[in-house]
Length: 251
Image (cartoon, rainbow, N blue to C red; front, side, top):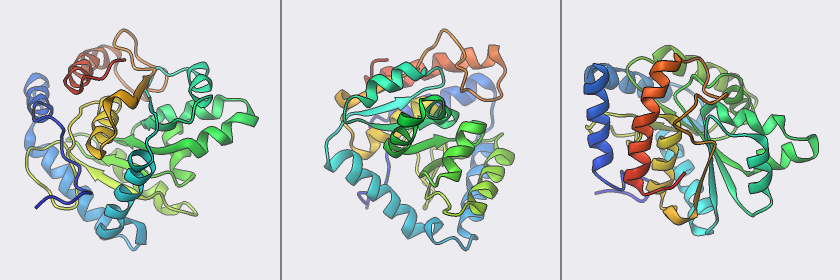
């Protein structure tokens, strides 16, 4: 029986896309599964209260209250987001969700605005390779949807270490990209951090009509993409487009 805090894909095609992505790039399902189970074991072996399974479910519930039970616009910050886009959305009573390192754009805002922007950041969605923007969000204790896939074990391990050493460790929600159910983790769909962020908030019940995608582009590699190989990244962005089309979210 599914619980309100179980984050399931709003369309089964989202899981089919993950399978197609693995086949396209020649990635192995076993690697995705191994990384996911290793992440789950590492987090649940921690002594941090907010990382226990019940508290992770409570984090989801809290975000649902903030974003769904109090209807509001939710703006997803993508890798190509610019400061002026954020300034415009801050003029409205919108909440922010950052795709990994795109959280770094908030610190480029004028001092008088930056802290207000950080207070609007409901969570980040990360696979651990977003660089300084991700690290700053973690050091601020922003909730993190931490994602496991086949080749990011070192990245999520490093981010967990940074989070564990923070004065207030970020609350965690764990995501994976396998078709199997993994108790204690979620697979709402998605491939890149940006489209996975959209999958996460749709799974929580945020209506597609209230979602704004900022800095979400398929023609350039955004400045907040972290370390990446440009040609491969451009290829990945085409799959992002497919996910967002499935969600019927414009960008």
